Length: 189
Image 1 (tube, rainbow, N blue to C red):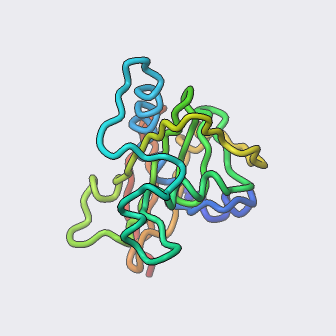
Image 2 (cartoon, rainbow, N blue to C red; image 1 turned 30 degrees about the vertical axis):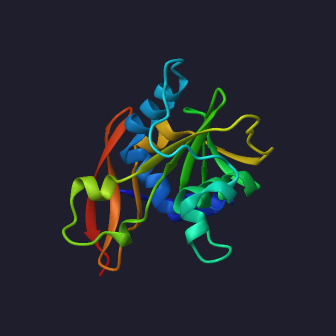
Image 3 (cartoon, one colour; image 1 turned 90 degrees about the horizontal axis):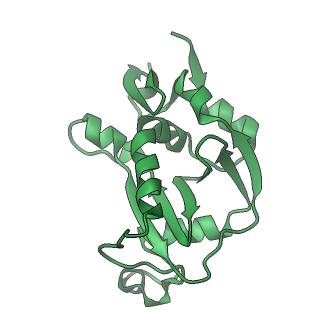
């Protein structure tokens, strides 16, 4: 099995993107696309905390140290202040650092991809694939005019993409079908 280094792939794109974000997108592509589809539904309802782009009214941000933002507003801030982002021509999704995102009508859907080095306890399929999604509906919210680095995710779905997972392992995607991948962990040493 020939591995494609996600680190080298991203380095060639010259974009600030964590390799695990690309891998998690491939592992969760079908699920992420369903989030985008749901947000496009005219009957879609925001549940839970209603985030706005401005963090000044966020209780969690207010409880943090001065200048610190909550996880969700950190993602929002990154997206709204990024200059160069990766863009998947297949799904119209943008990628920057830990975030995969897309405007769906007037809604900004953000998929945060936490790094697996944060996994505690047993390594399970659901812990490896873990993603968190937030949808922001904020009047007048628009994405900046980014410099775009294009790629095609369906080409990556047919490859064995590899990246650092933790001190012990690297993760390698295993092609499954057009919209999902499996994975295996291989020892680093």
